[in-house]
Length: 492
Image (cartoon, rainbow, N blue to C red; front, top):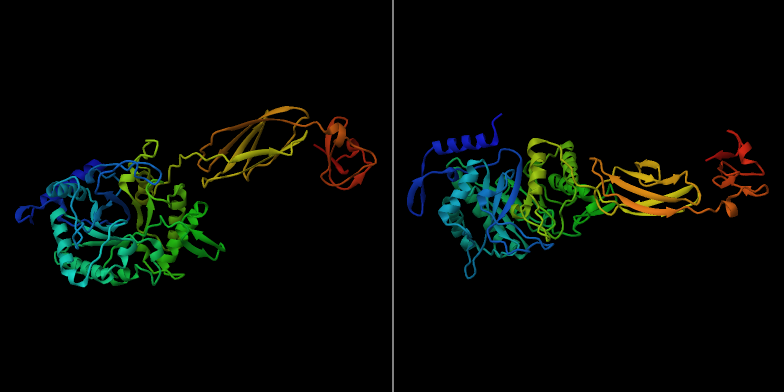
């Protein structure tokens, strides 16, 4: 097997061995890896790269995104979208300029990634960019895209229009028409100019705001990566579950990921149809990257992908906002350590199981109905980390509960007990241990002592000569210690 490093060296050699001539700024220069339009061969893990310097504390939870050169994008992302191509103040045509490099330096950044087999696209728009193109600007827009490609070596363009920009002016006709012309332009040279989109999923109904882009670019776009985040209560009605499944419902995250994608790749329940082979789910890298939508349990993604595959609708991959957030820090300055790419790249490319190291959160525990023989232990999970079983220790007694917490029997009267409870998830990760102390109550002398003339029914418990018994059915006057195996009492 060739190592990653060796594969990179071979790729660079093959690219640089095919020397050609390109024109940059009116000067002829030797062709580099950026001269080729690199396309992903199969699955994609798409990440957006910030073309601005982090101001710090710029996350939704007070964290900070990371600053790094484009070529330092983490290993595992094979499509990187440079964000963004915008319309400068005082101008009418969107364009792009690197924030921290000269044109030549930035082209070298793209060339390095291309040599590693990674695609680099320019993303048009963004949440705070207002793109407004008129029909008369179509030719200028085409020429500007071609200029950016020839200058920097971009491999395609990602439509990332949001809010009013989606329907502004003639965008819905000008942008698809212009991109078709750009794609046809490079097809003459045997190159594929990639066209992708990142619509917010509520706009993906058959008559939604993104329908004109999808319909007008049919057979031209390469894949679509809808944003499954920042949409709060938006979602769909699941008739099988008989409930509304919203994007912000963490407890039903797997059902949301599977259900929405299944509707989009089949074009059912009013959604526009996007072929599974051209479908990419978009998720935030962490809680700082988006207001809502972060997936706490990666198994929800894994299970949804497996269900889609089993239904005959295996999708192309995953997208995230953003690579900078994946390498960022939380509000306490703790690093996110590229958790997104480290989790999902192996899942997509190597078909490897997820290494689940997140320990479950122990639910709030209550102990009630304490008598001389039993205690009821109750609790309810407060997060979406699955719990496989609980391990409960009361005094010297140990119990394992696989279906929630339970009653514990066999306690002695007027005794102090130390209780320890641990939650264990399916991967064997253990929660922190919860500890408590309680005292059983001695009620036998007053209430539980067997009485000859009292009527007992099933479940009643008594103490007779220091031993605890439970009634199996209605009885009266039957001595508990003479009941035997077939009598109305059983010894506890």
